[in-house]
Image 1 (cartoon, rainbow, N blue to C red):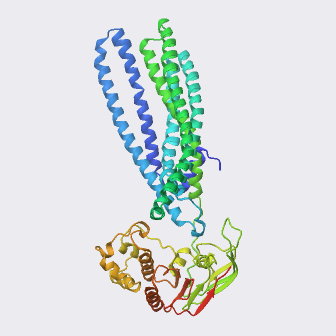
Image 2: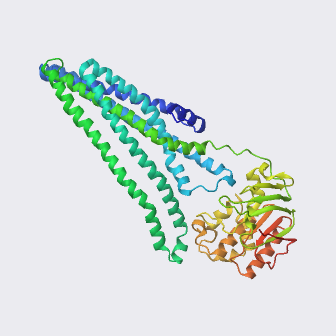
Image 3: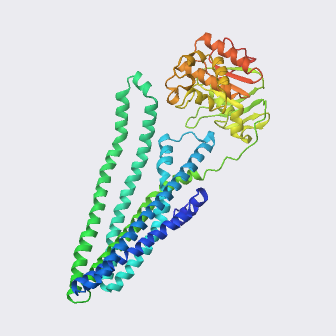
Length: 546
C-alpha cells in the first residue's frame, strides 16, 4: 500500500471511529484565529504611520479598543481550539486503543506466538497516538497551514511585490534544508524505536524472572546484557544530537539571517526610497512571520508523515487482521480424534509428532506417559487449538477443530498446564474469572477439592488476599492447587492436567486426583505424567515417543 495522506485517511475511516465534526470544528477555529490575527498588524501599521508619524492622536480611541478586542477574541478562540483539540485527541486515542486491544484479544491464538511483548506494548501505548496526530496535524493542520500560507503570501505581495517575491524565494529554501535534516533526524528516531522495543521486552522478562535471577546470583550477568543492549542506543544518541543541533542551526539562519538581516536591510532601502512606510514594513514582517510559521508546519508535517509511515504499517498490520469467523459450536460430550497428525515447531527440523492417531472417548480417563520432549504437551496444545498441525486433523465428533469456534472450544476444554498463569488480583477474583458470578460457597467447595482451603483460611484476608503478578506470592504447589480449583469451577467437558501435580507430595497428589476423578466422573480426563499416579484410575494409558 502506498501511504499517502488520502490513503491513510480513508483506511483509518474503515478501521476506527473518529469525530469528523470535531475535526472540522478544529480546522474552522484555526482559520478563525488566523483571520483575527491578520487585523493586529494592520492596527500596528495604523499606530505607527497615522498616530506616531502623522500625529493623529484621536485615532488612538479606535486603535486601542480594537487591539484589546482582537486580543480577547484570540484568547477565547485559542481556548476553544485547545479544548476541541484535546477532546478530539482523547476520544480518537481512546477509540484507537480500544480497537487495537480488541484486535489483540481476538487474534487467532495459534498465530499469536512469536510477537515480542515490547513491540506489542509499543503498538498499544505509543503507536496508537499516531492516529490522532495524523488527523489533527497531517490532515487538519496541513490543510489549514496551506490556506494560511497562501493568504499571508497574497497579503505580502500586495504590500510590496519585490519584498514579497524575495521572501517567497528565501523562506522555502531555508525550510527545504531543514526538511532534509529532519528526514535524517526522523530516521534516527525510528531506529531508536526498534531498539527500545527490544530493550522493553528484555526488561519485562527480567522483571518477571527477578526471583530466579536473585536465587541463581545472575544479577551481574543480566546487568551486563542490558548494558550491551543499550550500546546501539548510545551510538544513535550521538547521531540524534548532531541532527538536532543542525535543525536548530538552520532555524537560526531562517530567523536571524533571512528575517532580521535581509528583510530589514532591503525593507530599509524601500523606506528610504519611500516605496513603503515604516508601518507597512512592520506589517509585512508580521505577515512574513505568519507565513514562515505556516510553511514550517507544512514542511514538518511532510517530514514527520514520511517518518510515520512505518507506524501506520504496523498499525494496519494489526487493524487489517481478518476477523475471526465464528465457527460451529463445539459438539457436546464429544469424542476427540487425532488422524495422522504431524507437527514440527518453527525453526526446527526435527518433527515432534509424526503420523499420530489417537482417540479420547467421552467419560473415559487417560494417562499420557513419555519422556520429556516426546510431544505430550504438544498433543494437548493441538487438542486445545493453541497450535495447528502441519498435516492430519484433530476432530471433535468428526468435526475438524478448524471449523469449531475457538471460544466454544475453550469453554468445553479446560487445562492446568505446567506453568499456570494468574493475575495480580485476589484469590476470589482469580477464581471468578473463569466462572463469572460464582458463589463463595462454590469457591470453597473447589478449594477443598484442591486441598487448598485450609491454607486460604489461614490468610489474614482469606479469599480477598492479593496473590501478586503471576501468583508470585504463592509457592509452586499452592499455584498448582489454585489452578486446579479454578479448573473445577470452569467445569469443562474435557479435563486436562499437564504435569499439574508435579510440585505436590504424593499424599496430596493422590487425594486431589481422587477428588477430580469423582467430580469429573462423566467427563473425559487426560492426565500427563512421567510416571504412574496413585489415586488416578485410568481407563487407558497412551505412551508418547518421538
